[in-house]
Amino acid sequence: MKIKNMPHNVARKIRERAALNEPFVVVSKNGKPSRTYGLEEYLRMQKHPLRHKPWNSRAAANSAAIPDPLGAIPGKPRRSLSRQDIYEE
Image (tube, rainbow, N blue to C red; front, side, top):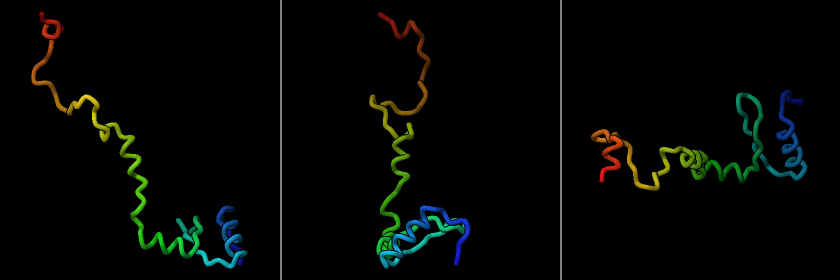
């Protein structure tokens, strides 16, 4: 059976695992085969699906998530400051 539109990497991994007589799982995305896993690896991922959270690193990139080093908090000043108020003697 010939499968059309199979990515080369998926086909290569299927050939490699089949040559070793290793059981494997092919996961499809949008109707096309997209990833190949060994059976034990796939079952381990099914048991612990939330162990790896890739979005945690994105939160650190967000400037609102990083605390200000001087301890400033968001808000607005209670009264406006003029240049004379700042440089008063």
